[in-house]
Length: 193
Image (cartoon, rainbow, N blue to C red; front, side, top):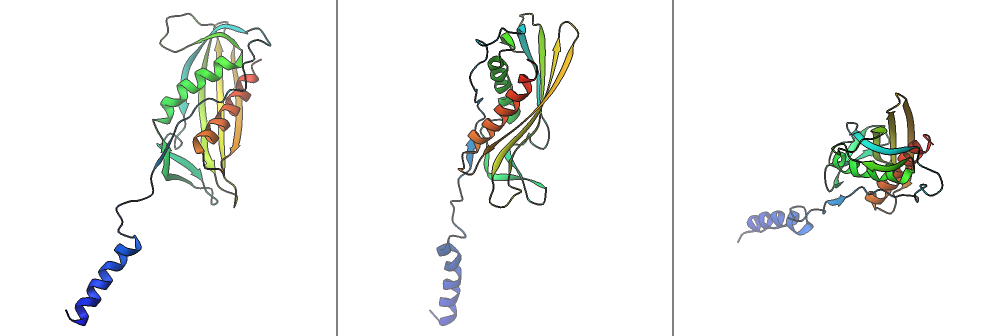
C-alpha cells in the first residue's frame, strides 16, 4: 500500500473512530402525564354539583405535538427531539382532567362524555400552554396554562384560568409537566368553590 492509500484509509476511519458515523444515537425518552393530586377536598366541603362531566379537553397548537415543546430564550418554540410524550398528549389530558375534577371536591361524581348518567355541570378545558421554559439561562422549568369553562344545568356559565410551574432541572420532564399542569387545573377548579 502506498502512502496515498494509507492516508485515504486513515481519513475514512477518523469519523468512524470518533463516533460520527456511529449507529447509536442518544435514546429518545418518552414521558406520561399523570395527575398529581394535592389530596381531595371532598371531605372538607360538600360537593357543589352531584355529577360533573368531562365535556371537551383541548391542547392548543403547537403544544399538541408528540415532542415536548421548549420555550427558548429568543421566545421561539422548539420541540425536543430526545424527549417526547409516550402517547398523544391530548389523549392523556382527558384522564388527567377527569382526575383533577374528581379531586376538586366540586362534584359528587365525575363521568366521561360517553356516560349515559345525567350531569349537573359540564367542564370544557383548554390547555393553552404546556412546555419546558428554558428562556432564562441556567433555568429549566415546566409551565402550564389552562382555561376552564364550567356550564351548569341551571344556565350559569363560569370561567376560570390557572397557571402552574414546576422545577425541571432534574430531568424528569414527565413529573415536572404533570406537576405544573396539576397546579394549573387545581387553581382553576378551586375558583369555582
